[in-house]
Image 1: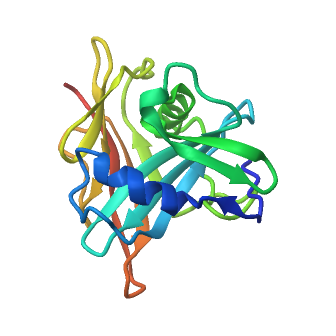
Image 2 (image 1 turned 120 degrees about the vertical axis):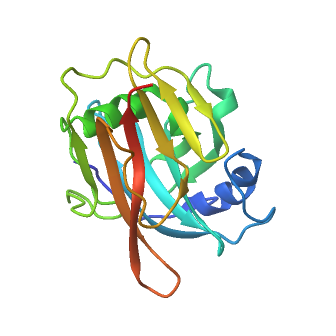
Length: 207
């Protein structure tokens, strides 16, 4: 299970996202946002090399789902997906990527949707996250996801001769899966007033 090191990270993840997020086509907030980490969860890399986090951030006007991976060396061919570099107090230099372009994250996202792995707590070691829910009614395993395509609200992964996985970047409280969805992931985050809300994080449906 995930090991969370209680240490400093410079710059912080939110500092990196403050610069990176406004450059995304699905971000509709201010050009210089004041971001708050409001929720999320982690998945485990079976090899124990790559950190995988699905972070929910808010900017006062909306909530966004940001999948991130953290690596100890650059990911070849993923320069376009680099969010930034950090210095971790225990692990040293870390390269943070938009996880939608990292094959380790996409493989574990498929495994999670299908029920082959479990969501881990975002900030506590060796603890499952019971707020994250998933389901799968497909009759065959999903193949490897294709290249991601950003829209104004989602990132979509088309599976050759198969369904489409849509990751909801802009979160809509109370949203539910579309009719006929083969799989889904839902999660929760905290509003500024402390109340918790749920939404659809991802759905798999026939193209």
